Image (cartoon, rainbow, N blue to C red; front, side, top):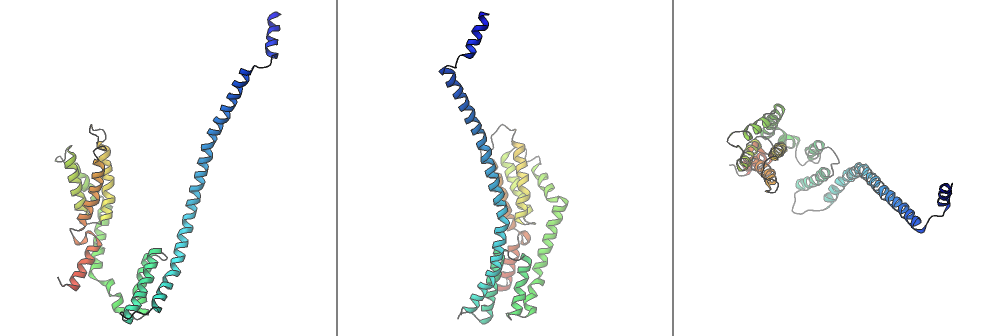
Length: 269
């Protein structure tokens, strides 16, 4: 009986200041903890909403740029048409107007690029800059067919995986072994050779995954290639070797053919 009375007295006794302080601290920490827990969620949701708004605004921005460019091209051409140029002949003046309009269309991508390219000879004929035979003659230039042949060759190499087989065969040769210097040299040589026949951009895009695979294979090695900046050297080798390989042949990159044609026409070499 005495024990039960004592228990009832303890239960009915008001809580002490220490107990109240502990309960208050516990409640405050729980509230702050819940607030800290909820805050990142709100921040995360806000960030997701911002990303969604940004993605939704991108098509609007592109549409705005295309619309502005569609009207800015003819306006700029008209301004040049109304501006007198004493040093230019009438045909050259008209050609400058066509050039300004086409450049704006190319930058803003107001029209598809092939359509914009076909506008040049068409406008030249309509404005009497040149007759149809002269305006459309460059489309039948032999250099265009050489372009087509190089593109077909590159597409065939990509289609059958010949480029990747060649690169892997060279990089896995016994001469390379486990020497990082030899591997770097052979990697650059393979990139150089492939870039002689296909475009520089395509060669770099091909060799970058090969280089990353090589770096992943080197990861279990004892030497820290990341600290030695070997990975940077390998990626730079792909870029520079493809640029140099594109200069080795005429079909290595399109500017080579254009430059060779201009040298042949103007210097007669």
